[in-house]
Length: 155
Image (cartoon, rainbow, N blue to C red):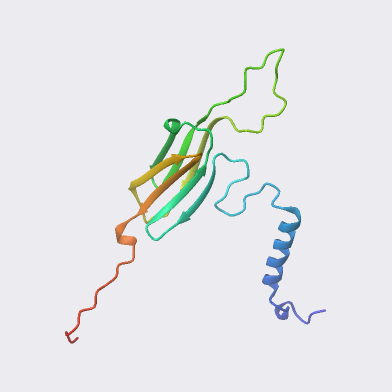
C-alpha cells in the first residue's frame, strides 16, 4: 500500500475530490443544490447569477408570466423576485380532470444576496421571451480606475 497518507500520489485531498466527482457523475446530486449559493431543484424561477466588472447580472427563467405581475426589489443587500404564475388548467369536474401537472403554478419568491459593492439605486430589469434579466450596477468607487502618468516631473 502507501507508506503514509501524507505521501499519497497526487495528494490525499485531490483523491477525495476525484472520488466526490466520480460519485456525483454516477449518482447525480439527488436533488441537492449544486453549490453553496444554489437551492434545491424545482425552485421557481430558475436563476443564473454572474458578474461583470461593472454589474451583477441575474437571469431568471420564468416563461408564461405577465411582466406587470413580477415584483423586483432590492432591500438591505438582498434582491427579491416575486409574483404569481397563473394556472392554465381548466376547472376540474366530473367530465374532465388532470392526470399530470408538472408545471409550477401559484405564488413564488426568490431572494439573492448581493455583494457589498453594488449600488441599489442603479437596478434595471427587462423581461422578454420568458427571460427576466436584472442588472445591478456596481458602485463607481469599487471599479478599477486607470491613473494617467505625467511625464517630465521628477519625484
